[in-house]
Length: 366
Image 1 (cartoon, rainbow, N blue to C red):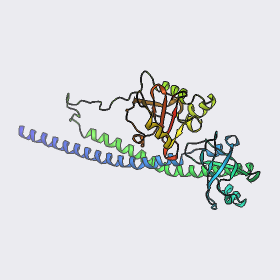
Image 2 (image 1 turned 90 degrees about the horizontal axis):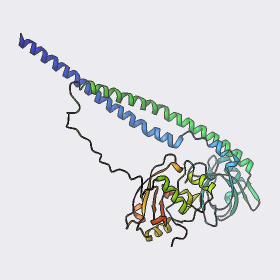
Image 3 (image 1 turned 180 degrees about the vertical axis):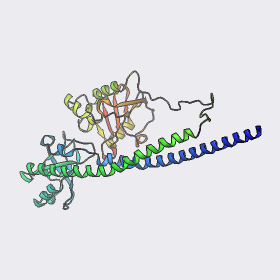
């Protein structure tokens, strides 16, 4: 009788074990499916957010107050093509320093310029233009809505603004439609992937009943990562930004600092781009940095943008005495600062677009 009972109990345990194995196997399959769905959803979701995010360009590019009148030198103009924007490369000097800007004219404005013979003008032609220089981001292209050369108007302000506003409105609509077409199936896949992962975890847990996940006292965790140093010599991110601006952007008007450096979406190094603080650029900056005395220098690296401006946070470390510009070729948002803030070398995320690196000295520093 006892043998019969033991046999029955063993069979029950075996059956329960097989059931648990089935649940665990089903859980593993659901986890794999879920992770695959999430992976498939993440790329198009990010792609849609970056390229087709619902940005209202029409309200900006249709507002005349967003534009500035500048004197410019024509460097290059893309040949007119029906129905397409035409790009312009212009030298828009600021304070006697050349500043090359990549601009564009919308298709209808490009057609008007073509009819008026603008695209036949030689390189170096001086023109008065009306452009929107700072709405979205560094390294972008900026719309031109008015062009005149020696008093001859090739594109009038009123006509150019109206055409740009309408083109931006239609483009915004197209991008929003594309955004929805990508996002809806991506979010569905993401939702199904999360549900599959959750269901898989539940089945895995149920399939492990009676089997503890952790054998008591045999599992320990270690913090393998070194803590980021968020202060340096008693200086935190806010102190660093304040001292850096005082040393290298001290000549900038307060309203310019507020608009181009401290505002959301801005970076400290905008003092050199939009603010026109004195500095060396590109190869000249790298050479100056290589020759600079690194004793007492430190490195501040932005690790949290937080929307930019005053919210950016930095980590700090000492600067190796033999550090060269080549060592920072692949870096981004890195500020190397000399002893007592005597000099700074800045590597930006827009170096590939010609914005940086920059080198500047504090006034009075040899």
